[in-house]
Image (cartoon, rainbow, N blue to C red):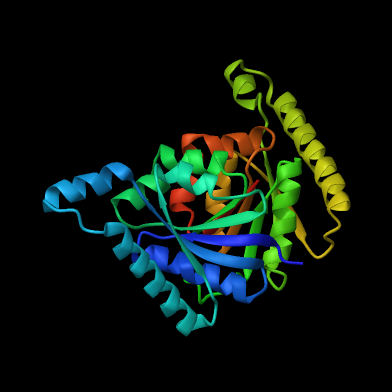
Length: 286
């Protein structure tokens, strides 16, 4: 059974979004979805401004449709994957989210035109990641390179269980490592209050033991024996970004809505920094 019902590549015709289309084609060819398509979103206000600027009423939609179809043909010739095309109109994030179902994956490039930068770096991206019913993949690595090393972040929630499941499905031949980044929540306050270092060490050890217990239970319930597990301490977004660089990770997988770690990871400003700067592909799973 395919991992996703449909994989959709969002394009602005930039080089970065071309890699998103190529990754979509590669996943489709690998049997990861039942179908695939290329999406382009035009905003009504921009189209009207162009018409006024040009002083005429050219059929811009038809021109964009032709460009999408030409791209789909190039990809078919290059990869053998057959991708449908869709031209959407409206706000970028809302249009993309409304085009998805819970069983879909949307693939985005990490850079592009001004509107693509807005999509990936601003509040529009947060809206898409948070509100889309399906999964989202931000592509930074060339589609020609396979995912050899995959890091899955977990906070032991149901979304992070699904993140692990998706990672195993998408990269069955990869080296997959599950990591939980735990924080000793009250340690800074203990230092500030001048608590004896022995008590701080005891508190830190209890936090570690609790994380070990939860990791064992999570691994047993996941039924993924080939996956390695790892515990790290610190602030999750920063530590994950460091691990991506240190371990030369190809794909980072996170759950969208979980407990404290993933809520902070996906909704805070640091989370957007991770999506922007993690030197690997990033998959966000609902």
